[in-house]
Length: 200
Image (cartoon, rainbow, N blue to C red; front, top):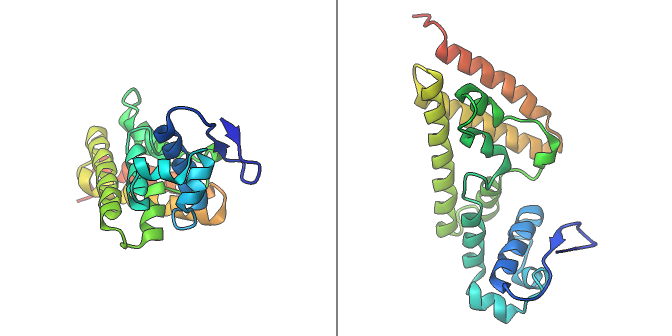
């Protein structure tokens, strides 16, 4: 894999496996440069494939965008969401782990949120993938909230999802991870309030 000297993005080299190279190129370019700002010409060039080869595998840009999102719609696909899937950790640690402030997790935000904002509902099939991913992530949070002993795990799960989305968006805007530090402390307070003695 080579390096694009202009962007620093890894560039797949030529040879067999054009479909995989094209998808890898789309993952890099769509995430770091944006879906709307990246044309199929750029993806093909980055993948060292012809446009004809690209269209043989992905007949439209929309099909390529869908393949890109589905390829990262996995437990390990979005780095900041991975903690909630770490079943070897206690549920509280998993819930707080999604607010990890390490800068190496990137500043470009959530690829699903980015797609929703960029495409603004113009591509219904892509929108459905985004919605399904977000709902599934919330359900994982709700499940972990039940494990941690929340009185109302669904409410807490949605509250943590709102905190997470806000911290992700602000981190992207500011280019620094301090929003995750504040969000994590707020999340800890919410978890304590939801699992501690009831005030009623």
